[in-house]
Length: 108
Image 1 (tube, one colour):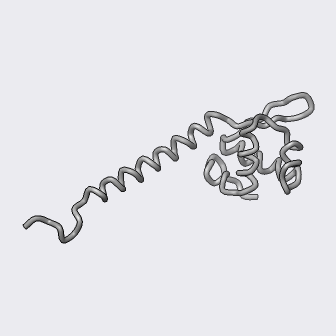
Image 2 (spheres, helix red, strand yellow):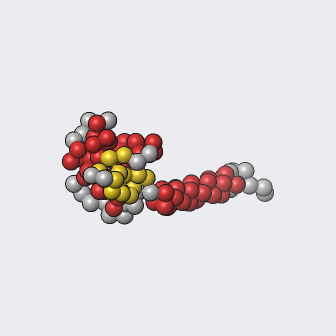
Image 3 (cartoon, rainbow, N blue to C red):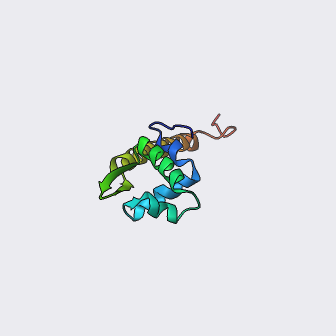
């Protein structure tokens, strides 16, 4: 499996990782709980969680003999800030283009 380092967008590009990420919206879950709801094995879920953790999107915590994974608010906030900035730039670019004079309509 390729390593995605700290790039949350690349980490979420995989459909299985995105499904795991979305499942964690409901609250902390163990690997076995996640694997029971997905068409992939426990080891595969663990590998996907490792990538999500490296990307800063999830954290884990010991709970008895299990490790519970949950969404990391700071990671999600950074991802949202990035997307908000991209959206703002796109809207600004659109506004500039919309305000430009249409060719052929210049005043003499």
